[in-house]
Image (cartoon, rainbow, N blue to C red):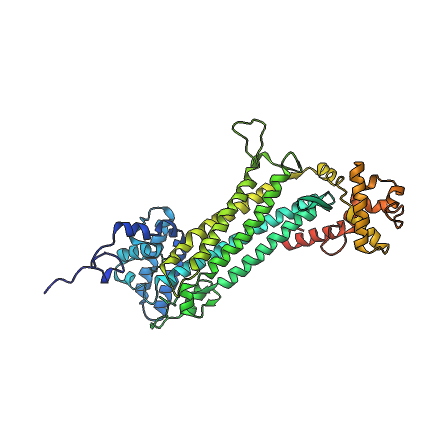
Length: 467
Ligand code: ARG
C-alpha cells in the first residue's frame, strides 16, 4: 500500500495541491498584516457560529466547550500581543482557525462547517464597521457640541458673511457656527442610517449558494446583535455596498472638516485676523521665528485627499466585478481602515481645537463696516416702498458706485445724497443701513436675526442635552 500523499502546500485548503505555494505568492496575497485588526469580531463570530452548530446537533456540547475555550485563549494572546501571526496562513480567519486546531484538535476542525471565509469576512467587516459607526456618532456629537458652545458664547457678535469670498452680508458669528452644526448633524444622520442598513448578518450564506447543513442563521444574527439576516446568498458573498456607503459618509465628514479648516487657515492669517487658534494647536517655523502656523487645519484639509482616494479605491474595486466573491475584494479593508483612522483622528482633534478657539470680535465687526455690506438692506427698503426689486438693485448699485468713488460707506452719505438716487429714500433709511439693523432684520426661518439664532442655539442645546 502506498502512503496517502500529504497535502502539498500544508495549507488548510491544500488537499488538491501537490506543490507548495511560492514564497512570492504568499507575500503577495497575505492580508494578515492588516486584517488582524478584525480578530475580536472574527472570534465573536466563530463563537456564535459554534453555539449555533451545537444547538443544531452539528457539534456536541463538549466540542462547543473546547472550541469556545480555545477561542477565548487565542483572543487573550492576541490582546496581550503574544499570539504569533503567520503570513503563510494568509489572513486573520486562517490564523485563528489553524491555531485553534493546533490547540484542541479535531473539534477545532469542525468549526468551519456550514461556513466559508466569504461570509466570515463579510461578518467580521460588518461587525467592525458597526462599531466604527457608533464611535463616529460619538465623535460627531463632540464636534456638534463644540459648535453650539461657540454659538452660545458669541451670540450677538457680528461678522461678515461671504459669497465668492467677497464680503456679502453681515451675519452673526453664532449663525456661522451653527451652519457647521447642521453639516455635522447631517453626517450623524448618515452614520445612523448606514449602521441600520448594514446590520444584517451575512453568516450562513457560505461560499455563495448557502449550505445544505441544517443551520439557523437567525440564531447567529441575534446572538451577534444583528437586526436580521441578508436575503440572498449570492448578493451577500460579493456585496461591499456597506463599505462604500460608510466610506462615502466618512468622505462627507472629512469634506466638512476640510471646508472648516480652510476657513480657519484664512481666518487665522494676518490678513483676516478673525480667530486665535490656541498655541497648543499650532507650530512654529524652523527658520522664521515670528511664525505661528495653523498646521492642524492644514493637515486635516490635506488628509481629505486620502479619504477621497479611499472612496475611489473602493468604487473602482467593485466596478466590473462579476458575482459573487472575487479575491479582489480583499483590497476593501485597507482603504476602509485608513478612512476610519483618518476621519476619527481629524474629528477628535478638530473638536479639541474648537474648544480652544477664540474670535477676535472687534476685528470681525470692523470688517462689516466696509464694502457697502448693507446694500441688500437698502434694496429691500426700497422694495417695501413698492420699488420693483430689479429697479431697486440698480438704484443701490449706483449708490455703491458713488460711495466707491467718494471713498466712503453707504451710512456715510447724507440724506440728500441718498435721496438723489431715489425719491423713496427718507430719514429712516439709516436704520437699515446699520450693520446691527441689517442682521436683526433677517427674521425669516433659518435667518441670522438674533431671535432666530438664539432659538436655533437653544434647539441645538436641547438636542445635545446641554441646555
Ligand atoms: N482574506 C480574504 C478577504 O479578505 C478572506 C476571504 C477569502 N476567500 C477566499 N475564497 N479566498 O477577502
